[in-house]
Amino acid sequence: MRTTFILPLLLGVATATGVAACGGSSTGPSGQPIVVPTAPNASNVSIVAGAATMGSGAFSPNPASASFAARPKIIWTNADREADSYGGTGTTHHLISDTGLFDSGTLSVGKSYSFTFAATGTYSYHCTLHPSMVGTITLTQ
Figure 1: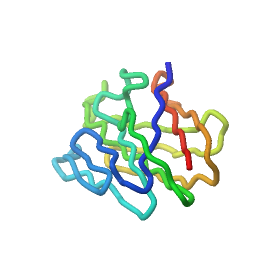
Figure 2 (figure 1 turned 45 degrees about the vertical axis):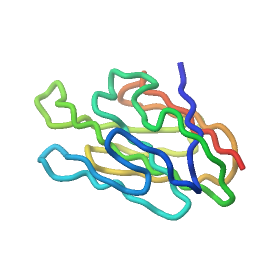
Figure 3 (figure 1 turned 90 degrees about the vertical axis):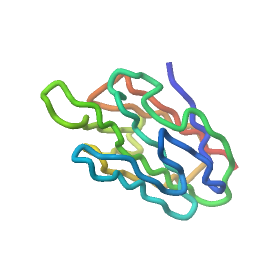
Figure 4 (figure 1 turned 180 degrees about the horizontal axis):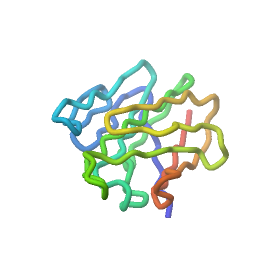
């Protein structure tokens, strides 16, 4: 099952669990705030706590909608502070589009990855480390 995110690119309306699209923070593994970056014409997607076992619910917003007039940038931030099975203080994720268009590399807790899309369309992606984590970005004008 895939969840579609129609992302707010001009309005900056996306809200993740405790994190607003216009910037915000939550607590990282050492109690330090996780700063969510912002940029003009950008939207934020948060990897939520416990994401590894949440399937399509692993990403927030879920869903939000708006249109855009310029090339949109999507910023994914790993806010998954759940303790991992090895006693660590958070879970690492690795996002990749199903077509290979983008690849985040590994994202430890508090780290972000951004990608600027060149065209409208629907872009499916998943976490290579937790294959049940799936999402879809739908960009419209």
